[in-house]
Image (cartoon, rainbow, N blue to C red; front, side):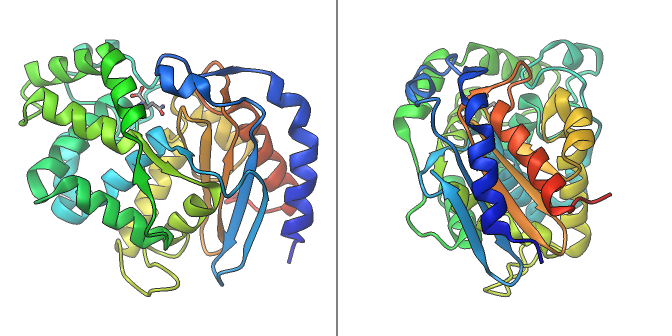
Length: 305
Ligand code: GLN
């Protein structure tokens, strides 16, 4: 077995020069306040071993990583019917792009671009009694941390500046692919994006995807084997947006990023790994975080290929 602790510490040292590169997201003003020097990384193996380095225990804004959890809720509720309303192809466009929607009649390319996540949010609102509470319960359950919560300041900061997401939602609605009031969908979406989790929470919280959909410590079936396989496939092809091809090439595992600087990766039957570094590359993925994951799979010799 690789010496995960030594590898994580080595990576933390090696990526230090990268922490000055890239840009911390500022289109959500609250995120711009996060110091770019932060770096954390955590690995949890299927047998429950935890390894961590740097700021791995500090909570940060998970942003689009939350889309994996809302997709999980939507698949639990309506299964494959979801694919009548959202596609499964990489977009090759920015996560918040509007152009493709016009050409494709309001059917978002995949559930991880913002347009797709808004449709998934609409499904969650339609199928869950108290969607916020159920999302929180699901995330707390998966990660084993009952203290995980949203950050209303981040949500408000995004709402006050969320003109592009409002445009996307209105546009999708014009094609009839959203049922709920635009404000309700956006409020839920900003809520899910504002959830704060640490690398340790995220590595634990994604372990069910490395374990055929079953939470390894509670034994709870969160998704079927088949559904977990498919979420991993979507993370590989769409989880890092228009950098997904490069991420698959460089890192070689399914991964999901967020503009808070987090990225979570899954190595089926082995482990989940989470990294956080706030400054982003041009595609909106953590710059040092991507490099750290590339080093992780190179040093451990683990990938899905
Ligand atoms: N809340 C962010 C947005 O909608 C999420 C984007 C992301 O993390 N890639 O722009």
